[in-house]
Image (cartoon, rainbow, N blue to C red):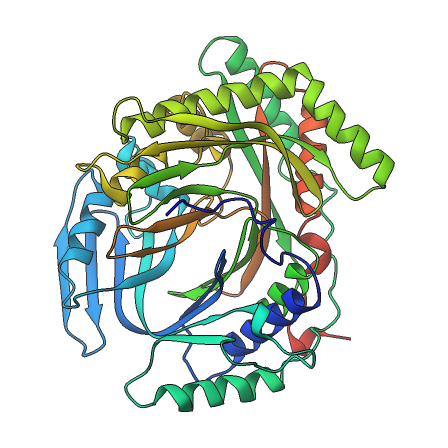
Amino acid sequence: MSVVIETSARANHGRHTDRAAQIVAAWAAAEDFGNDYVVYEGPGGWHFAATPRATVELRKGSITTVLRSGESTTATWTDDASGAIADALDALPFDEWQVFGWVGFDYCAAHHDLLDRVADDAVLAVLMVPQTHVVLDPRGLASDGGFRAGAVRVVAVPDSMEAAELIARLAELADGAVEPAVARPVDVSEDVDDYRGRVATAIDEISRGEYQKVIMSRRVDVPFTVDMPATYARGRANNNPARSFLVSMDGMSAAGFSPELVVATSADGEVVTEPLAGTRALGVSDEHDRAAAAELRSDAKEIAEHAMSVAACFDEVAQVSLPGTTAVNEFMAIRERGSVQHLASTVRGELAPDAGPWRALAVIFPSITASGIPKQPALDAIYRLEPDERGLYSGAVLTASSDGAMEATLTLRTVFTTQGHSWLRAGAGIVEQSTPDREFTETVEKLSSVAPFVVPAPEERQ
């Protein structure tokens, strides 16, 4: 079965899509299933996973598995985070499992000799096997927003409930789901951390041959407490992502509308990545959008940057694929993602039997389009030049199962919250032909996919 990347075949916009996002946001906001949950929108609909049956937490040098019974196991690791996760999942006392969770940007440090740049107490990844897991298919929603037969598929049920009881409660919560509150747009126009200056430094380093491309990002703090479920529902109604997600785990929350997958593997051994590189604004007007798309396809800087990214992705996929199976089966298509449009290509291979999904993640993560080329010196530049930690930004929200299937979607176009603070973040690909002003403008264009749709918490609404 092929991995599905492009989303045009499914209902990516429209009344039922908006309603589905409102429903899963209402499930997440309810207290019925605890504070740890993942909403993940994939090709088959919206997954709602909560009530952890087991949790796996990866920290610098250690990995801990905690079962719902309270039993805990901790192991140590040195330089292979993905191997540590694979071993921990193989040791789970379940015949079959599906995990949901996230890996932060610092996960890359384990595979690129950069762990000295990571704080000793940093959490690199958190995964859970849910005890509550249902899939909402928007095609099963009735005209009044209610459930028709088949709208909700139950995958896992809490010990305290029957499947019919769970569906009844979810339907009750869905009936109470309403249009999200009015958003409070976040100003993203100020260069508060000398982004232009850091871009200029990167251009100078590139001109000296230190690396060819690096993604420089900037953080924009949100000056109010955010209602994350409402922000997810509001933002999803105004975006057409490759995947979307709403996460609350280990004290960290995120609501995002990802433009691309980092990597996906199928149960029958296909491995896929989709590099997006090259950006123009979208939604100004039909005439402007067409002209911007034509400019993307003909701009020498954008084409060179994109081709460079595709070549690097090809090499990475080839590292985990059977010889001769890696191919670019789509090149320089236009993908419309929220407030921007991108050049996109798709690279596929047949996964080598001795690789597996976690090895594929180790090799391809972080995405070339969120790090740079060559990856090692680009990562070094990111750790040197960016003034604050990326955290989950440019990491991945993922789901993986015991049959070998995995999707790891890039955490861009996302609102983040932890310890009472919320922020947005965006970056741009810097090459020798870049200019600081244009790259800053590109971050503004990307942030416009999220910044207008941030909903304040109830106590902060006017």
